Image (cartoon, rainbow, N blue to C red; front, side, top):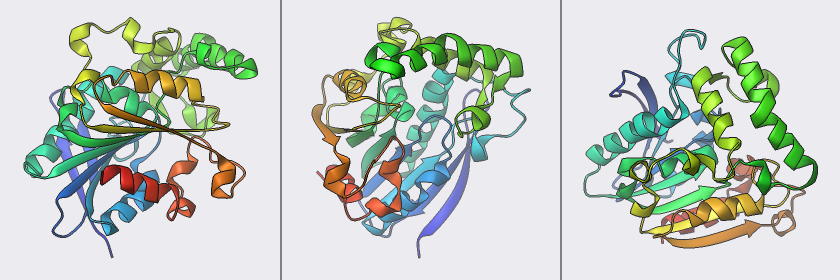
Length: 282
């Protein structure tokens, strides 16, 4: 049975972040899992348990305004997407490093988690990083109907609905968690620019170059949220890392489709998860 500890940490701007620690005994390996947009940390619990059984103490967390880190109604609470990086993730990374000053710390980032990783000053604590469907979200990375859909989402749908409701009702639109107003509007603004958030950020706000260990970046076919081209683009931004790209085909895993969220389903415990484990142990 996995020993799971619940933690709440305070951040510099006053947001409380809920963390779950999956404790492995006598381990020298630590892993932090950074969630996708609007995805609860609980979605990664089975994968965290898998890593814990294989010798990793694992930390998952919810961004402010999401899941266990949601302390008030989104009509009265607000935060930005940049704050998820420079406040929330930065605070979690510092907490983990303080708890494990001499151990090997690794990171698994899903989608937006890997985009934000490059904005976090403390991202240099990681030895190995696994990026799962981490992408540039601009419509130029898509083909056909997907291009039209992404353009519509970021130029019209998300801004309009967010301003109308005072937050983004993602549960109704995309079956994800509802998102804070300023976070959703900033997300849409990144999606409108071909150069993603690099269009808005100064050089002093970018820390991709600090990661110099191993990065393994995954994509899969028929991923409506992260085409192979979009994942290639974002992986290249971690320019000083030892980068490995893996594009998975569903037929190689005896399934019809893996999808953007399929990587963390327990049916892949003996296949894809074993690859992740190997990447983290490199």
